[in-house]
Image: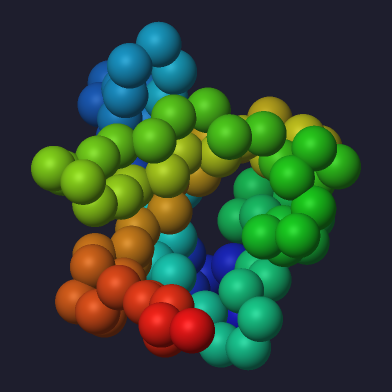
Length: 102
């Protein structure tokens, strides 16, 4: 996925859109990512994988709607960009996994 496929958050006075105590620089829709969920940071091209939390990125915030995850905000550990991940709402449409009776 090339960096031009990411959306930059709307600018307000030359800065990225404020979100809490930090500014969201990029918005990544997980539904547009193919494969195993790895994408490159839009700011520095550093690979970000769901399997490599502390090495590649830090989770900064989770935004819930009821019991469902709506957004996840991560910070790239290389360039310090804040990235808002969305697309989790699709997960709430899947039935919960149940364990068969033994």
